[in-house]
Image (cartoon, rainbow, N blue to C red; front, side, top):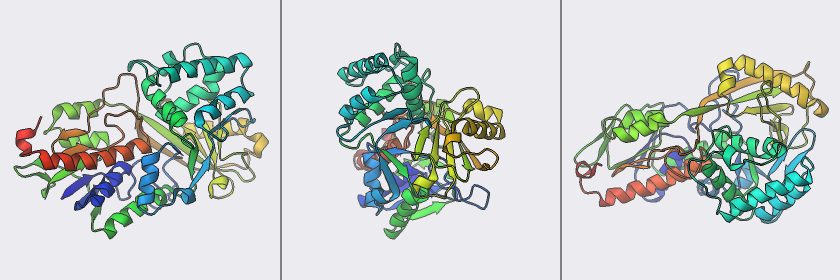
Length: 437
């Protein structure tokens, strides 16, 4: 019997894997809806039915795509696959063509009309050195240091927005080692690895709803709206709120996980508690007549312009005129207040999207959604807690030690790994009391 504490993408991935292994699973989630930080909004408020943020997948998310298929979801139906494109509203930018991603990247750089010939050669020189080093570097190096010497235009169009999109951490504070791992998987991960996969269905239809249905059909016990208050070890296994299990997969957010295991593993709890988090704000607006050329368009951000990307939901199966503006690395804007952030985004749209039909007098704010602890800050040399807390007690989540930033793929991989590790340690542990570190 396995307990999975947390019903986000990591917990759902762990539960599915455990059921596939033949274990009896009980899944606890403290919220009323499933999906964690990648969910559709519930309730009757103005943002009901909207996603809690504009999430992006890429073709390299192989574990996530495989999990979706195992529970009966066809990624080709629910995701729009497009070649990686970072284009501004004026049409300038970078777009990868077909073929192997690494070669497509070289061709895209050579064709990029936003850069001078010197800019292109300097970027390819840096990229060549990164590839020669196996896309690895010292763990204490920042993205700023990694990219020293790159032209400002390359930084502004490619490096800085890509770093924020992938790590949700500004380049001067972001881990170069993690950034390079993202580049490696995208450029060397095989055909389609760098493709953008944009949801064209609400997030709950991508994984949470079909996963919970799949689990329920196979006998798993699902408890939403249940915040676990205590995990205890016993002579024969573990107890979760007094209910006995052979093992526990802890897929709760880092703060909740730290609270639950503090009496059992204070050092692990301290590492989880020390993680710092960065918010993401999504501003949904309705602007009749606005029709972007691509589903995702990059925006220049500065002290007066919060958003780095805007998504046209018309091209993603959504209603005409709905746009989603994404503000990553949003701590400074959240500090100013969500109303101020929304006003600045609408003003930014008026400056950047007028040529695509935006008329400020006719545009309206639909919702502002802030995920205040969206991702951990992926900083150089960051110490992340290990997955194995004790035999039979394993952590799952995008924050556990690993090569990836806080992404859906990182969460799903952590969940699947935790289920396998938990089963393995239960088979070989002897008494959990004797084997506690």
